[in-house]
Length: 111
Length: 115
Image 1 (spheres, rainbow over the protein chains, first blue to last red):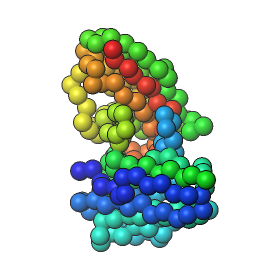
Image 2 (image 1 turned 30 degrees about the horizontal axis):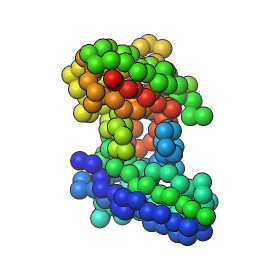
Image 3 (image 1 turned 45 degrees about the horizontal axis):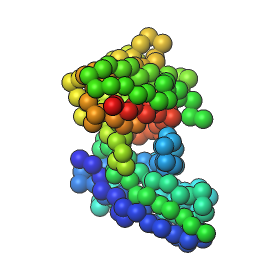
Image 4 (image 1 turned 135 degrees about the horizontal axis):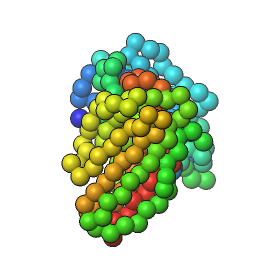
């Protein structure tokens, strides 16, 4: 089953913060976050594994709540380059072959 | 550059035709995954191959088939094409068989337009 992402779309001014949520109805082993610019390939941002710690680099970080089967992506002091569609992908077991992607959150950062 | 190569970048074909999309994984990666992305939609998993063998199947139509060759490149064959098959088709690769717990590298995609 496809994870649910919220919000579906968000518009920010440069410098503002945003949170994107990803929720699954199934137990999760891993959550992956990708960003896709229009017409381009999805680019890996980070992966969070069950039992692992919160991750982040630069001004983008993410958390994983195993009990709630949820993950959140935090974008701090957004930049124009953050614009794109963010997808979470979930793996249900440690041996999961594939990721199941959410429908995406479209983020637009304006001046 | 992810290291995953897909050809062709664009493909326009008529309904009822058959096409082949090609993917070369990142050097050293043994798994190849195919995803379909329709307009403004998420990524739908089609199929995975690991070291030449089919490992996982998603919502792949019977008109579609894939294989992975000894040199690890993969081909996705789409036949009896319909207008609704128009989409971006992405290939991704990982080192091991468990794409659920490792970073996947995506190719630039093949944009298929069926007219």
